[in-house]
Length: 303
Ligand SMILES: Cc1cc2nc3c(=O)[nH]c(=O)nc-3n(C[C@H](O)[C@H](O)[C@H](O)COP(=O)(O)O)c2cc1C
Image (tube, rainbow, N blue to C red; front, side, top):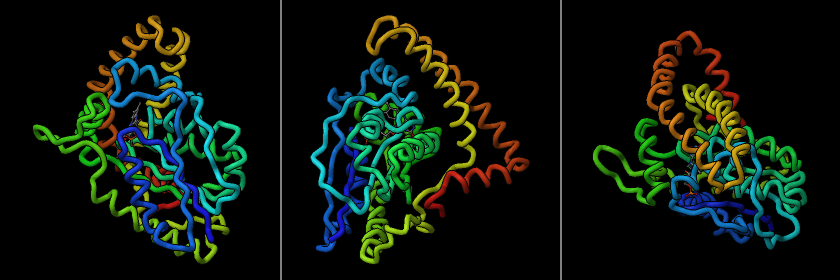
């Protein structure tokens, strides 16, 4: 009997739904037991998010501070761990980071093959780089990564995703598509569960090699890599400033957050479109380098 542990933290239930669809084929097999464990922060994060609380979470997310989480009731030894997480400010969500930094995680992950499963707006590349470091720190072996991103073009999700997070509303309006990942894409993740089931039956997970290659598990948008890198640098600077301003929830911190939000809005309305245009223009000259980057960030489960 193979034992699979499924860890996740989901606010609206979208990632949970993805995790369920992904792992469904594993459950119908008597040879595999699946243990679902939700990561639960000691102090819950709100959903939908009040405006300031949302931005207040930003410094702790980018600096990977994590938060205290409930201890999980785990079994002894798992053959495979599936870790479902969402991206918060280009970093793994705070509760998931909190769990990865816990004492329990150190014992749990040691030498275990791990498959990460991400469902987010469309910026996860830097979050996964941080995830790689955290998994390395607990001696886990990352063998695969599957990523789902929100439907519609970046320009639309700039509106639909925040609207969803601040109001809880996902419906289509005006010319905007619904927020979140396409339902069909969520359903189709069961193909990865099928593949993992076969792999587990053949002991393939023991080889510490990718099992989900050439299945369309991940697709990196080369034009977003540069934006993610620049944004991460800016997040580190502003994150430090906001932290220095005061403790989470404090009035002094709210002032710096207000300035930051104004800065961010100006950036989104001016520098971001300009940056996108410049990147489009120089793309033919940088194609080789960008393609190399895409191939790198699509590891271990590319194409
Ligand atoms: C505080 C916060 C920050 C977020 N930052 C990002 C981000 O940087 N990149 C991204 O693609 N999605 C971002 N998202 C969207 C999430 O990754 C995810 O799609 C959404 O929260 C729904 O996940 P759920 O299953 O937990 O409800 C953010 C969400 C929250 C709550």
